[in-house]
Amino acid sequence: MERNNILEIFSYNMKRLRQNAKITQEELSFRSGLHKNYISDAERGKRNISLKAIEKLAKGLEIELTEFFLLNN
Image (cartoon, rainbow, N blue to C red; front, top):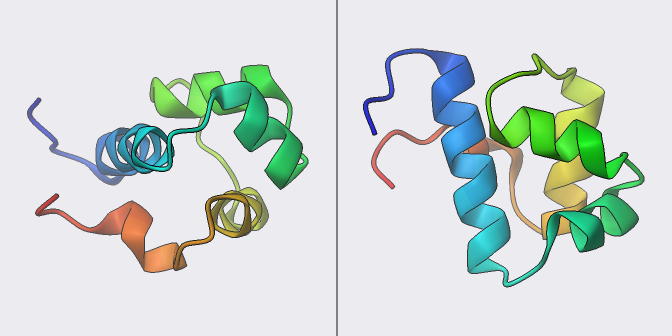
């Protein structure tokens, strides 16, 4: 996948990190307090999510915020 912009990088990493944690979108929804459809849209790059939502996702995945934005993963 060619990742040219911040939204593509974020959505790619979000899905990868969730899958690496071996949890479903539904489980991440429960852990983060965000709707499953919101998570699905974000993973597909269809939603430009807020910093507050990113913070909730990081807590739900038990990762640092910066992991969503790394290029070489």
